[in-house]
Length: 257
Image (cartoon, rainbow, N blue to C red; front, top):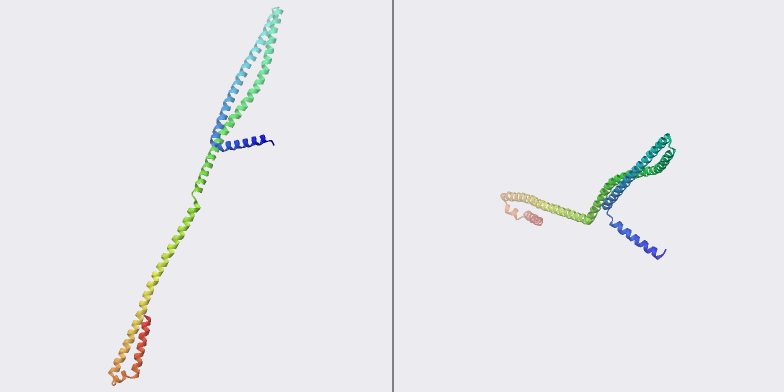
């Protein structure tokens, strides 16, 4: 392949790419309809001209045919009057008109075929134009829908949905963490309150038990004092054991506090 052919192909490919990228479907379709309408106007003019020409040839044919018949009748009349020379001239005129009529008849037949073909082409072009108008509207609607979809996709892509969803996930996790912290604080507050009440309740039991033991001991010492020889009993080893037990009990109570 020569250098010129390669350069020519590159130029043509670039031109085709530039034209393709510059084509607007809606404008191209409108222009195509305009071109077809112009072709239709030209076709109608051509058909009208052919029909007019056919009618002129038809008129010429009819006139030549009538003239030939007229000269036929005149030749017969001249022959009846005994004028053979005049009859011969009339027959010559009749022959000329008959030949003209025959030529016009051949031309008329040819034009009739041409006119019929032009009429069929005109009907076909009108049908194609009507179909093209319908298809144009459909294609323009599809082009508009495709353009709108492309804009929507571009807008969606520019919105950075993944980043937005990641932000939502982070905020959801943060809210869950806040809820967990709040629940833990509530549980700790409830636990502390319960422990305080439990301590109070435990202290109350010990105080009640201590008061009962004091009352018992107090009652026992009174009874011993009322008996004879109570001083000896208080100073006896049994009294010392009671005091030691009482001190040990007080030490245990202090450790509980």
